Image (cartoon, rainbow, N blue to C red; front, side, top):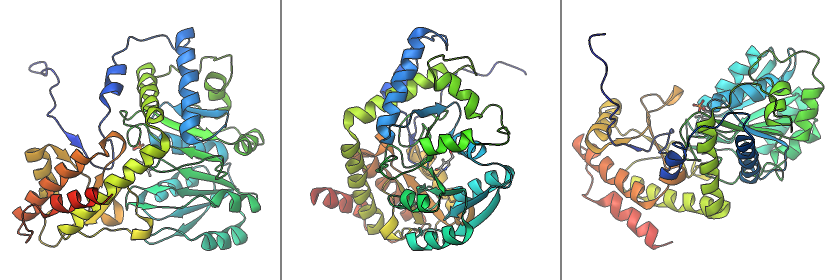
Length: 394
Ligand SMILES: *Cc1c(COP(=O)(O)O)cnc(C)c1O
């Protein structure tokens, strides 16, 4: 090394992609709080408070509710490695990129995986899932509640009841739904759910809140084989996060727990219903603006998520060049397409604290410059004006 790298000095960014989204200033400030030890009585109280708020946000009384010490995928892995044993039948419903990740992990757990596919941008009808449950009789059904690769949402409100008719556990990927759209774990009879800190909760990436129903805990207790992952084995993690002993399992990422605690406080101060309504309002305005500029959504309108807006890249526009211009000239990050949509879609996330009018107006104004720069015929200001009208009509 010829010289020591300079002090960190990243350019200001507005993170309007599929995640991470910007952390709330109060979250960043909580992260400068001095460290406590992971077994300090004051930290144990902070863990308990965090778990209580997490239950509230997940709308559950599940005792086993805590944040896994890693990103959303670790929550996915935790759910699958604990609930699936070699030879178990698992059905994964995929309607985009993240369903496929569950297929991959369930396969590595030794499950007999049945993949049920919907076209990208669509979601599943209950009856179609019923047919699959009837013929396969799986131990577990896994679905993505909010498919970030397409912007489509899966209605899971009746799915738990359906699964339980067949003695099947319901696992839901709520990485992009928690904190953005309604999620009622108990009422909807969800047996296991995982999320992340960096999307709807406006914290940095690094924690994955999970929750397990008593039914899921029974399945865990009935296992005949050891969980193949040591780190994610709930039977031992429970002694730290799940009991009054708080026995050492691993060193909790103290600062990230502070962050999550602040993020959850923000959600509860606002109120779940108000927060979900805010996401819906800003989505309606953003959609009006994007469509006024001739952009077309990739997902079926009936299942469109408010927090993740994926649009087709118009003919004549350059995927990478367009996003690069947004980033370097306007300081705005949006996402490109994943998997089948690579090079074909742009993904605009307005999640958590970034679901607000100034983000909507800013991204619309910048997108207009980028689109016009690539030759699109757009009347100046048409996106922003359409959003303004949409807000005025609410
Ligand atoms: C982001 C995301 C994940 C993965 O989470 P990481 O925090 O990146 O590990 C999983 N599922 C969905 C639906 C996501 O949007």
